[in-house]
Length: 364
Image (cartoon, helix red, strand yellow):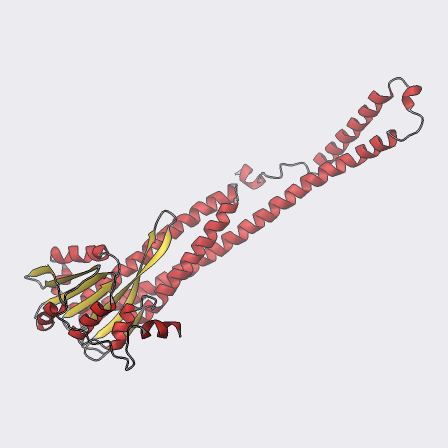
């Protein structure tokens, strides 16, 4: 219901976006670029109104329109009208909370994928939703972050790579492949963090490690939410009977599907490792507490007979020193002797080994 309410503010009562003109100039913090390319030519430009994109729809070259920046409903709706996008497509583009999906609207395909990255000093996982509309020879992408996400793809186009000899479907594959690369970067970060936690956990299980473990587990949960639907998208593009995906591009989408399955398995493996680290941390903390209790018990046991002798000697009776001149030193020697004997017994039965030292690690 919450999602329906959010979409409701962008749609009128009939479910159709408010009337806007495709000739309306762009305004606000939004950036629109058009890349038109094939094997022989390349044209890059910025546009001020979406009506400038219309001639590219029927061009023989591949046209890539990228919209980035702060989404304003009237601007996105004007592009929707210029390209005859369904109102639900416009609503999905404006709603950044959607999971990955793929839908066929007859004259074009609409999909959404997520690109993830670590942001800030705390390494917070941030997901960027990329919406993709593509037809026979054009691709329209929407993203809220700057265009730096697509820098590797633009570089390949400028260098006249394989992408220039392929169609719009190969450009879509390249965009999804870019998202796959971002997932592997996160997994590499998690693997490195897990190794660091393992090394520290054996030597010094500090409370900060527990916070790091839970943070990594949360990252894996968020990453799984992004990757899991992408598996179905790749599978759909690899099997879908649609004129917008050429036969030559199908193996690339099958490759994407295999990668997503592999990433999901890696995520599950990392989650299992983190659960194991959590168990090790809790066990080490319990063991440490048991060792501390053991030391305190030994100290208490040693002082029990000493307290008995001290209390017995201090009773309000005739004092021995009235008849024995060296009674005090003798009692102190006896108490020290009792303590030494008890310490020797504890040492012989192995209770006085260093409670915070791992014997196995010492032998290695």
